[in-house]
Image 1 (cartoon, rainbow, N blue to C red):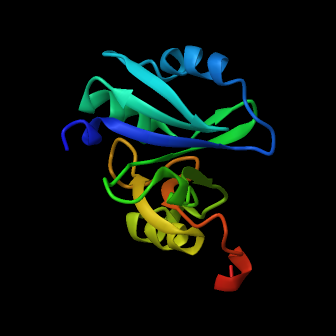
Image 2 (cartoon, helix red, strand yellow; image 1 turned 60 degrees about the vertical axis):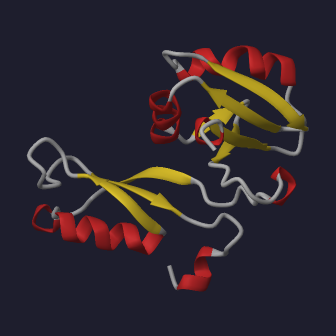
Length: 154
């Protein structure tokens, strides 16, 4: 189970196949991991990443989302049961900027509420003073890319 906790599975969402060798060669330097990562191609555009440290894996997750050749690289944490082929790769996380918010509405509560209209709120960037006041609001959300946003009335 220790080895599983050092892995991520990634899928590049593209209709065309990426150059697997080139992708594997450069991904570690793009992520700037300290202790190293090894990538293994599973199928077209699907890779397993083996990290040397939990800190590096956490950093890659937190700094995402990532792209490759203008296509989204979806990362999933393997849970140890099921197969890679059954993984959905449908719940990306994005940092979203919300602009033109009146100053009186720049609060933690309203940031959470506006983010909730987009998807599941994972985090907010409340700024140095922890009060959300700034040029724009920033919220990290996760949503299902297979779901039509208009189904929620947004």
